[in-house]
Image (cartoon, rainbow, N blue to C red; front, side, top):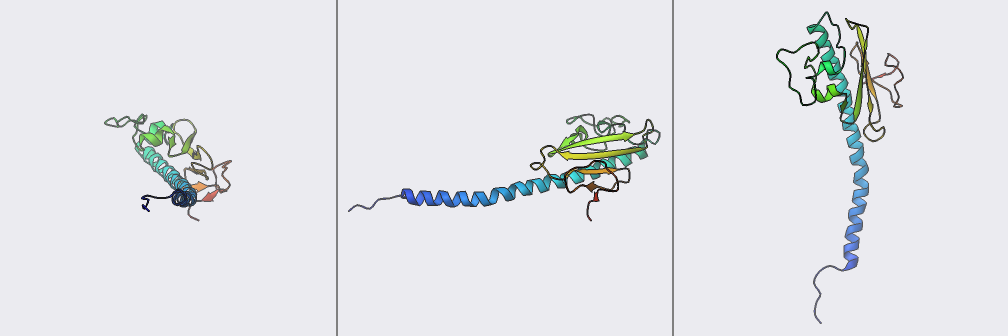
Amino acid sequence: MRKQKGFSLIELLIVVAIILIIAAIAIPNLLRARIAANESAAASGIRTINTGLISYANTYPTQGYAPSLVALGPGGVAATCPNPPTNLISCNVDGVLASGTKQGYIYTYTPVGAVPVVAYTVVNRPVQPGQSGVRPFCSFEDAVVRFQANGVIAACNGTVLVLGQ
């Protein structure tokens, strides 16, 4: 009798089943890792904006804090910084962050007061809650990054949790 070469259908089905089981275990962990990375980038984005606002206020003391998030950037996502920077294009943060959307989060900057801007609030929220991120982050002129564990920030003040505690 001649010997057959190759794999039987049962052997191939078993291998496919094993691959599917491994994938079913790995995919949720991959999604959780992506959410954790987006949240880390969101907290870092708030820190970057805080630093940019402090630098802006020191550079343009008559203006106070920046009038808008766009004024902290280079004037667009692909724009280059003018030489020298101005109070409307200060180049303190990158263009993507200044656009208001970065890595699954939407950033909202609210200046308080007319010129000079004496206070601000910056809040970010996940674009797709539960998929691009879970926790929103916020800060104001004390430059402390805060978050709310339940996913909703009604007002960014001392009642929300401080990051790192």
